[in-house]
Image (cartoon, rainbow, N blue to C red; front, side, top):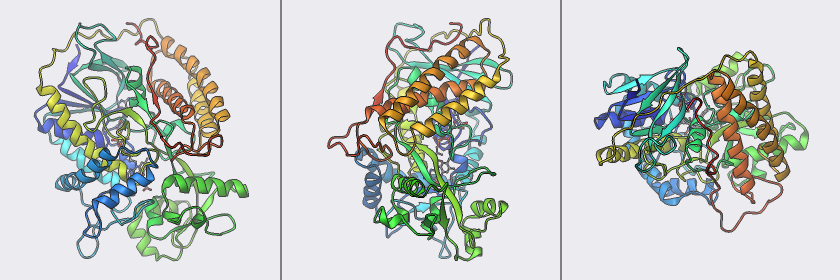
Amino acid sequence: MPQDYDVLVVGSGIAGLSLALKTAAAGWRTAILTKKTRAESNTNYAQGGIACVTSDTDDFESHVQDTLTAGDGLCREDVVRSVVRDGPSRINELVELGLKFSRDPGGGYSLGREGGHSARRILHVKDITGRAIEDALLHAVAKNPLIHLMEHLFAIDLVTSGKFELDTGPNRVVGLYALDVISRKVKTFRAPAVILSTGGAGQVYLYTTNPGIATGDGVAMAFRAGVAVENMEFIQFHPTTLYSKTHDRFLISEAVRGEGAVLRNFAGETFMAGYHPLADLAPRDVVARAIDSEMKKTGAEHVWLDITGKPESILQDRFPLIFDRCRKIGLNLSTDRIPVVPAAHYTCGGVVTNLDAETPLPGLFACGEVASTGLHGANRLASNSLLEAVVMADRGARAIHAYLSSSRPDLPEVPHWVSGDVHDSDEQVVISHNWDELRRAMWDYMGIVRTTKRLERARTRIGTLKREIHDYYWNFRIEPRLLELRNLIQVADLIVQCGLQRAESRGLHFTLDHLEKSESPVDTKVVLEPGAVDEVPGL
Ligand code: FAD
Ligand code: SIN
């Protein structure tokens, strides 16, 4: 029997949880499916904070202009203005849920500074902002009887009425198939409104700040359902992740530079002033490229982040997580320079939505990092992601309420998933090898500095992997690693296709073959060709 809800939310990060609270508050039975444990999300690891105008010395126009400048000519200005203006109301709601942002001794918000911002405007909970947000939202969700949160349910594909010819009405989303990771059975869920809030795709690169969940599942699912995906070439590389040959790399927040840290090359010289007037607090694309260029010049494997001289007690209090993680590997922020390198961090493009989180496919909504609203343009401004997620969740919930309140056809019967004659693979190594190969190829050929030849090389590799994993998907019992790899390959292909469409260097897309900027930039878009649908097994 299918499980029926009014609203199906895929993902339990800031976007999915915020939206579910609002649809439930409007009276809709809401399910949240999440592929691992409930807190496991990019949100949970966010450090720097949420950009929002809350101070008397700041104003909306400055935040708008900073966002447009970082976005390098591709932001949608109406979206930027709406998101920035809605920010304070959404922040107040988080505070009402119990989120306690750090405050300064006078009682006002302690506001951080990050790259590309002309003012201190980043609300934070020390350097564990994401974890505090997840805690507050999950606490509220747990208390709401209209929300059913299900862990270890991996959404595989959307069910659309048109693809399965379920009725004669216009094509729309009517549910999805999800793998119950514990029982290993595929379950059918039906709902008139489905929200993708599956986060980003950092795992497509060898080095990333993102946790393992970030495999672009929502982008791949929407694409397979025929929804346009845009601007995927704009993968943001965070300038400063810890470099280590022996320990896990992890993010060193840009807020550390906001508190006075500077980057130094291997000769010990500061270098950012030579690249941008904002020096170490330039927008992220500029800083990551500058580090890449310094490393190439000297052959060094990293640069240094230097905040030495700041009192230990201050650093430990402001950055407890970073301080502790560095100390565990023998580095003291107050006395040691930290070796850092850039790593893939954020997916600026994604599933095309409007300002109400609606995709072009009726019944399908997308919210958070998975979506492309036009806020970020060619390069996201620091700490605008959590802001976008919480604002768009509110707008999306209103749109869903309107959609569900309007007359709409009943949910049709949805065929069960049939696994057919598949069995467990005895060659799991194929999956892990292909994961490694894909991530290495993307790092080498689709990284911070690109050329058309490198992109074509990436596309050839991806084509081979795609064919191999397609066979694997059809012939063996599905399991999460295989589903993730299938999605990662799809997303890698979309990133490269968008990159090949963009014959200019802009924001995060820097190619040696087209160093100039187009005078009339456009979004890159990819839509599944008719007839190229990747069918669901057994149907
Ligand atoms: P996520 O928080 O990533 O949640 C996605 C959810 O979807 C997860 O629960 C995941 O398990 C689930 N999911 C995915 N696929 C499936 C599937 N197939 N089936 C079921 N469930 C699925 N941004 C800022 O604005 N400020 C910051 O300070 C900041 N710091 C960051 C630090 C780090 C280390 C990282 C990685 C990111 C940071 N970002 C920051 C970016 C920001 O955290 C993310 O963009 C944002 O949290 C995304 O929220 P989301 O709800 O869209 O997705
Ligand atoms: C950071 O703390 O540097 C990350 C902020 C962001 O990704 O917006």
